[in-house]
Length: 251
Image (cartoon, rainbow, N blue to C red; front, side, top):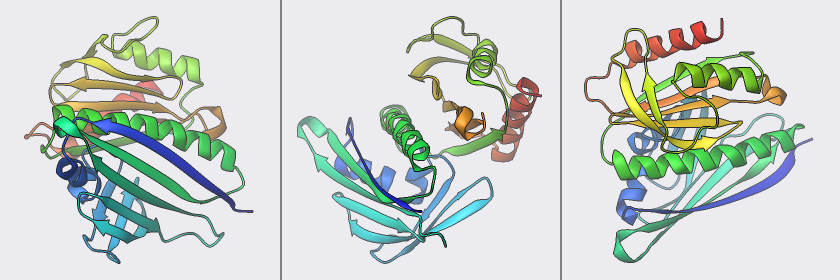
C-alpha cells in the first residue's frame, strides 16, 4: 500500500539566486551535480525527463518562477507511487542564497528504507551542489555513471574502495587521494565528503567523484556518480574506464 511522505532540506550556498536557479532549474545545470540526465521545458506545465541507467521518468513542471520557485511532479506509477519536488530560493546579503527543498509523494511497501536512503542521498547531493557552485560554476559536466550489483558488504566494499584511492584508516575531509584508472590520466584530489557507510566524495581540479554503497537492505550495490568538468573529456571513454575499474574492484 502506498505510504505518503514529505522530506525537507535546506542549505546556504555561496552563489547568487540567479546562479542557483541555473543549477536547479535547467537540464545542463542539474546535470552538473545530480546523478543521471535531466531535461526541463522552462515553463509551467512544461514536460521534463529524468534518465538514469537506461530508465526514464517523465515529469511536469508545476511552478516556474525564475530566481524564486521551481517545482515539478513525476508522472507516477500504476501502484499509486510518485514523487514531487519543490525548490524555494531566497537571496541573502553578500551574494549568498538559501535553497530550501521539499520532496513529497507516495512510496511503496518498503517506504521506511527508501525514505532513509533519500534523506542521506539529499545531504550528499546538496553538498555536491555547493561544491559545484564553489569550484566549477558554469562549466559543463560530463556525467559518468556505473553500477555494480551485489558488490560486497559495507566493510569489505569500503575497504576495497579506500585502498584503490590510497586511503587508509578513518577517512576525513581534506585527506589526499590519488586516482589511478586504467585508460585515464592519474589525478590528485582531496576527500570533500564523508557520508559513511553510504557515500565518499572526492574533488579534483577537474571533477567531482562520488562512490556510493546502497547497504544490505538494497542489495549491496556500489554506484559511481561522477561529474567531470575537463573540456576534453570523452563521455563514453571515461565511463567505460570507470566501469572497468568497478568490475576489477568487485569481480
